[in-house]
Image (cartoon, rainbow, N blue to C red; front, side, top):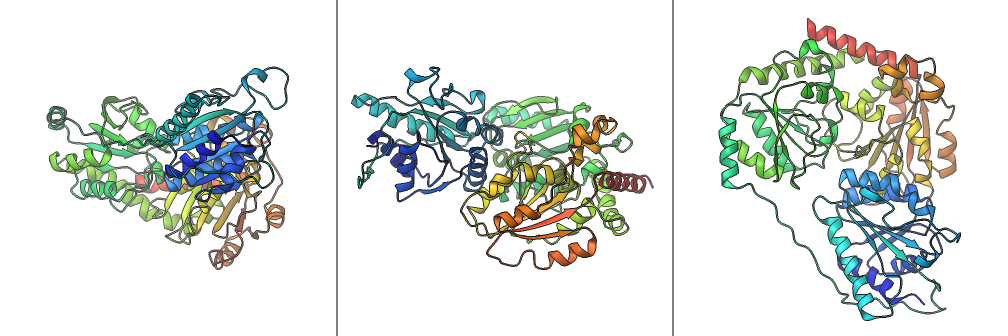
Length: 561
């Protein structure tokens, strides 16, 4: 018989708006699995590989902007969740992790599938709860319902993030034949209501006074979801030449009024003259551009961080104020209170932007075929309503080099690992009928092949694999690129192609090695289909590195003319 508090846990999840659960098979977690699988208001899916399962849940929660449940059995299964949990923590994505466990008396007694699971995720969850291991009294059942309410509230509380509940379970795990689970219609629920913080009039007066000595403002949004209100406010500031807005592709705030080609010149100190700001304003999470971060760290500017929770993250080492408010609130105030700025400062940035924007198409026209040219062409063919998932290393950098995107961009930049990019994209397909395009390198793609090991259709998934048979990013990093051990120990060369994987999982597949094949393959790539499609672009790692350097050199020459 499944204990009623476990059934009530699931009923509380449903009552509080959680309607998706990703389950991984196991016996110790059977009571949780059966309760989630049988609840009429929860869509439960089973994913056998826990590492993949957790990234799939991450991909779903990114889209849904509410917690997705993860359920696994005891032992090392819980450890396989860890990479995705760390990513969710730093991306501020809500997950509710439920790990089944042995009862406390059996921990560290050489019993099967037993590890130290209490607080196993350490600082990478917002909080870890320990569920009661028995329910002999009403107080224990009350405690259990209180824990699940607190955990869900905390996962959703800004900044959102993963929350862990470790649940010791004793046998029997399975109900009797024909036994029906009884879900409470009105389980005990308490909700948390959160308001948006506003800066005090006294604080705003101090900020206004400080702005009187500022004439060169640089605004840097970090990674976030698209936000039309923020976009409009940033565009107003740029159109009135009150601020320069620098936007990486993962900011999802790029427009014709923001700078998006900055990586092409910020790495060259000779172009830094007259670009240094008086004041940096930032919000959101991480930025991709290393040249941008290095440029700002060397500046003498003050830095105002907009961090709603009030915690400082001093990326540029220039922080002078942390503003515990929302970007919309602050940018609205800034638009209304900022006087005209130095027009030359604005023109200095946009002059460089315009030169790169004009030069790139001509440079690519004469460029040999490789990853860079292929993506330059391919990005124009992705439907505007597709969501784009980018793997780390070169995929996200190429797209950042290539300027403004209109599609919503996702990338696991919380920890910036290659693990889980396939699975995160698969999770995204579970939440939408729009096309989901994954652009990935070969190492990230094959590393996460179990993302496709499940029984759920993903006909809207389109995968573009940049297969240079190596970890090509190490050829553009100055340290490893000069080492004799480059190919064996850094690039880790491999001979795989995606063809066998496509056949194994029933995907449509095409491989291209030149521009004509690419153009032909893309003609039907986004046509509706019952199966996902893989487009593999096969190139040479040394040649890609040489072509990237060639483009950089040509742009530098053009900017110096």
